Amino acid sequence: MPHDSQPTDTIWYCIRRNGIAKDEGWIGDVTLDDLPNQVGVEPGDTFEVCIASDFQTVPPDQISSFFYNRDRGIVGLEMAYGDETLRIAPTRMIAANLGFARAMERFRQQLNISADEFATNGRLRVFSARQVLVPGGSIPDRMELHRGSTLVTEAPSDGRDRAEVLACGISRWMLRNMSEDGALPYKYWPSRGKESPADNAIRRFLASLALERHGRYFDDKEIREAARRNLGFNLKRNFRVIGGGIGAIVEPTGAKLGAAALAALCILESPAFSDFKTEYDMLTAGVNSLADKEMGFRTFFFPPERDGENWNFYSGEALLFWAEAMRHGAPGAPTLERCAETFDKCRERHFRARNPAFVPWHIQACTSLFKQTRRREFVDFVFEISDWLLPMQQWDGMLPDLRGRFYNPKRPDFGPPHAASTGAYLEGLADASMLAQMVGDCPRAKAYQRVVNRGLRSLRQLQFRDACDTFYISKKHRVMGAIRTEAYDNSVRVDSAAHALIAAVKWLKSGRTHSVGA
Image (cartoon, rainbow, N blue to C red; front, top):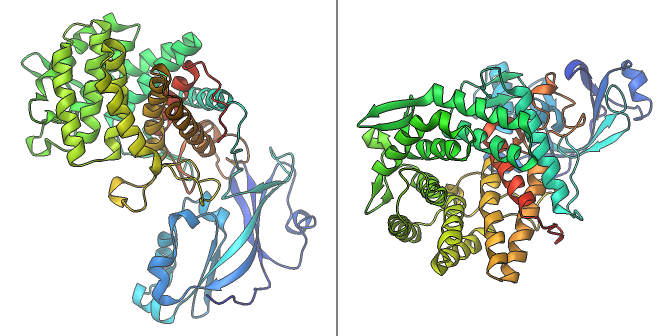
């Protein structure tokens, strides 16, 4: 690809006050030290700078294949058509949560031209950029940024330090964003400062579970009370009696096995169990009613045409609830024989069509069942599916802020990389590590520990941690401590935080330092 001549105005600047842009533009022939005075930075302002270089033309026939999400926030984009030119710095794309395709679409809409017209007569270039935050406002020192953030170290001396700061940041974010009646936002757009209208009851109940486990581990009464209020809110909002003594978590799209199982698990672990016993009994009856001799579990109470969807997720959530209900001696708990028969069916179906979504929930269920029975088949299956998952964690050859996430580029049908997926996998692998320790499999224990440590580093990288991470956000209290969806997608979802919090607490509860490096 040819390298093009540098434009004269190669420095992007943006002056922000409380995250809101006051002035921005491109400028040239000025040093970084002189730039603040040149453009009128005032005390209290945050000053964002990108120094562009290495401009390269993108051939028209490569537009659709050249740009990848992993480059978003790393390289900038220049578009030209006729006399109109628009250059977008990488930090601006991060601040606006703007993807390449959307940026090009907006440019075409502005000029009222089609994609074919732009491909024929337009010009497109990419460029590298050094990213810097200049002292001002809450930024005391000049900070070099990577994709609009700072990098988390890759080799901690103690994985527990990382897990604790990750967990405490998430729990404080949840407390700050919880309403008086116990509601938490499902999804929030930091760049817009608005909540998304999207919703998902399963993911909301994950937050209830995460808060309870965190509050119990740290003996924090405020957090445990928040967990109780959140659980109460979620049940009031979505629990319904659907007939025959059965209760379900009902949403506009239907009633899911996974939602009933997770809601029941939340109640089972809550100190307010007696307050929600009626709902627990009917949810238990609902989960039991979806047990299936061939599939292990059916997955929807209704609508019937959706039954079978999301089996990889919901079967594991239900089996985990069953295992824990049996361990607690809870009313309505299945027998060990019924759990074992269902486990056999789930195992058989997984081997017919393997999917990573199946792995973390079934690791947790099998770990609980092994602790109760000491049956080796549960350990062997945990090791089988954990070993299969491990290569999906990306590390060597990856950009530093993407290392530790889980993604198989050869199998995009398994889903895109996502903080919620990483957190869920770590929940399971933390149990797998503990199980390997229990049975004396030191090589596996060490391998799983390394993967969890790397994953925790990835989640910490995605966490809004300080003024540098939030330099472009006006409502900082809405995001501090939250987990971004990806390094190039700053949207916040409650299940990303919940999975990360549960994984971190499991790691802390294990009582080991895990000093195996990243």
